[in-house]
Image (cartoon, rainbow, N blue to C red):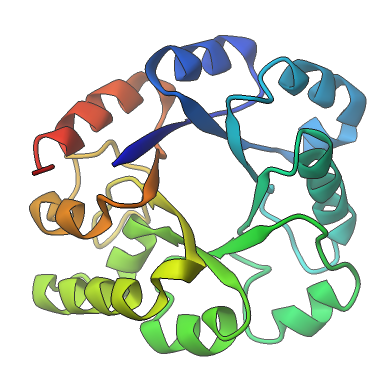
Amino acid sequence: MEFLGKSTIKVEEIEKAVRYFDKFEIGLTKSDLDKFSQTKKILKKYRDKIESIHTPHLTDEETDYLKKSDKLALELGKKLLILHSFRLITLGWEEKVFGKYFPKSEFAIENNPGDSFDYLKNSVLAKYNLCLDIAHLYIAYPKLLEFKHVLKRLIAEYKPKIKLIHLNDSSKRITGNLPIGKGEINWKTVVPLVKNFKCVIEVMPEYQLEGRKFIEKFIK
């Protein structure tokens, strides 16, 4: 299992990520992209450690920020671009967003909390790659047997299109980003299924090393 950290553009967070992980994902804000040159200067020092660039949460009217995220991913060495928003990835999003701007980077679309297998199959995986967020999938399928069935099916049918996996915990009421082991997800079930993927420990920096150690207990 290849573990990746997660960081903002704050140098102290990046330094913590590179201390514990070989590579990491950068989560961008709109403010970071408004200061594009400054953000690029900070990240350029770590370009060999950056695996992926995560866009801010955008509406379908904010494709300028998608364009800037894409530009940054390309200029830092063709990094994987993760597209995710609670508002952008909805029915009709493809025409609204990609009709205005289509990324030049390799990209993957992250599933939203509650996205069903059929939605992902028909609206994402039919054409695009997926960044599979385990906590968001759990919100759609909180019953263990159903969750395990859907996760196994996604991996069996679409493994080459799953470019990255986000690991964080969740409950039926809280949609992800809980420290790993502090929610309701059955990690004994999840870890054997995702152990051959690149996995981002997508929790706050102070919980990332603890989360990694928790996951490692289930790797066989």
